[in-house]
Image (cartoon, rainbow, N blue to C red; front, side, top):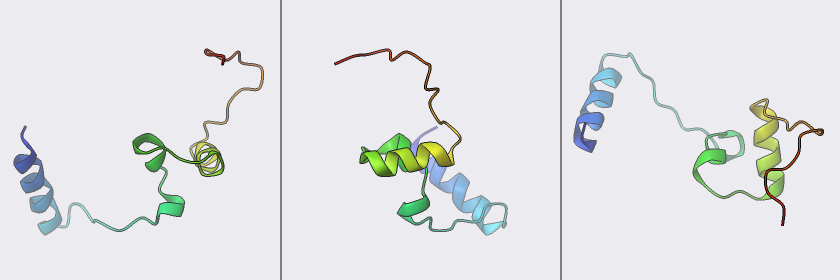
Amino acid sequence: MEQGAYFNWVCKRVANNEIHITRVPGAVNVADTFIMPLGYIKFEHFVKMLGMIPDPHAQALFTC
C-alpha cells in the first residue's frame, strides 16, 4: 500500500471516530526508544516503562 493510501485509511477512521489521535509528550513517548537515539537516562527510563528491564545474569552479546 502506498503512503497516500495509508493517509486516506487513517483519515477515514478519524472521521468515523474509530481512531482518536492525540499528542504524546516526548517525556512519556516510549516509541522514541525504537525510532531515535536516546541518552542513557531517557533510554533506561523507557526500557523500565516497557517492562524490558535487562536480566543482570544475562551475558552481553557484544563487548567493546
